[in-house]
Length: 107
Image (cartoon, rainbow, N blue to C red; front, side, top):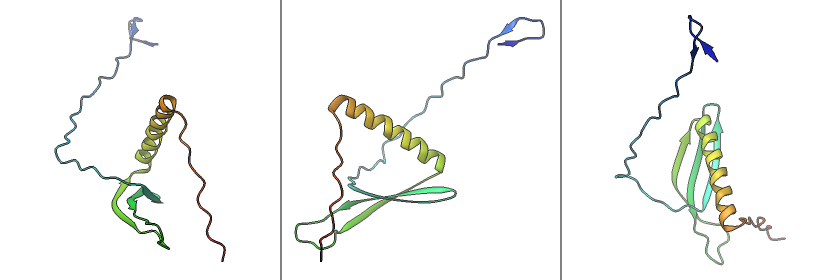
């Protein structure tokens, strides 16, 4: 509790919620089934793309389409938001299974 000079209780004011306007007029939607991450002291970079592997191809053809650069604090906020979103999805639809990566062929 906080007290004023006269001894009365001073209740801390609640922070006012700021309203924001999201402008989606220039938004683009992309599909990505591949990502790669890199980082430095002051940024985290996420590369997004599409794995275009076709049957019989020796090496996958991954077409990178976007690079997202975040401050480390914003990357952590994104991570927490993704964790909450995935948990809510699994609570509603069941667990998401991630298959183990394929083993390279023995030569």
